[in-house]
Image (cartoon, rainbow, N blue to C red; front, side):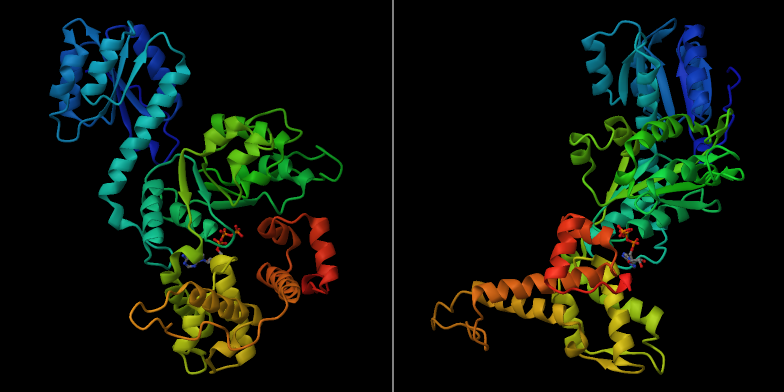
Length: 487
Ligand SMILES: Nc1ncnc2c1ncn2[C@@H]1O[C@H](COP(=O)(O)OP(=O)(O)OP(=O)(O)O)[C@@H](O)[C@H]1O
């Protein structure tokens, strides 16, 4: 057995993955070893099939690059033997003659991939990355029950599926893209991935791309040297370096300016970058998690987001469902929040009545969990210590929504086929207002609600409503909506 060309391991996860190359061409072995070692893996090679198989059965190999024509046998025919190992490696077949028959046999023997040696080094890198990811997912699914919740509440199918993905992501080191509407918990879940990963004792560094002024994005992420630009009176370490050995969380990645995207792409590929004004590159071994509420593929079409960056950050995706699609979680979230924030179990804590809880479950929560928590905070503050909360404590827009919802449900009910009667009154107890008045009232309510949910954050208002800033201000003026955040 040849000595392993051990990687200069700088990762926390990569040290667990071992790669073996079986190829009689020592030049190919050296070439591939160099690439894979540079990616941070532990790499060994063997020049014959016999030595290779004995290596696999005497130790642990996660990924195997297997040549077809070897001096002492055919690699493809050996796959079945290798698969008898209790934990067989993922196999990537490499061959000089790239013929379709070989590819078919490789796939039928459940090889992971089939690559021509004549291809570019990129093909090898991608094949290895994909196989490593698959391997990690397999391992993660075995230890899925180990995942800690890290404050995540919810038992709905949607949330349980997301927790499974957190486990998979935590056991891997590849970039994750977390998507979902505002307030669904993108940051909370990203923190959970970090907290359950081997990087947990290192920093989790947040870059909020939406909140950073455009001219500061670059220096904040990459850092700068003294005198790099007017006002740079001292060196500053960028957040990318601060995240070294930990996780870099890029919130609202869709807002990253196009000019920065190119530099960022290079930095995540190479894990090296140059601070503003500096001549030397610095290295940072960070794990990347990005989040967005936007449709990045749509931004790509509009040429506002680079396609190559998208493919780089989207290796693993986690989509958080909106709260309205997991109504069964509302009670648990509300109870938990009340217990943590308002001492529901304490003497002076507020108590939620059953009808109050029912109202919470009817409402559709466009601002998701954040809106639910803000509403509870506001209701508790207004109701006072020790109060029992009833539906009338809820903000008007929520009660109005719920009344309309109940009315709409009634409208769709069909009469009892036996008696021909409806269970309840078909018409609302109050006379219907003229259509125009009703619509005006709805608009005013919507805007009031929008400002309340976002706590007056105009950027967030535009994001949720799809209105432009100018249009939003005009409507707020027209319907006399005050933004307390401005005062
Ligand atoms: N499943 C959950 N269990 C407990 N708390 C939750 C859950 N989901 C979200 N929250 C809470 O809701 C609030 C908003 O969550 P978070 O900031 O993670 O959302 P987000 O999707 O990142 O929002 P935005 O897109 O606006 O940045 C936080 O207080 C968070 O702790």
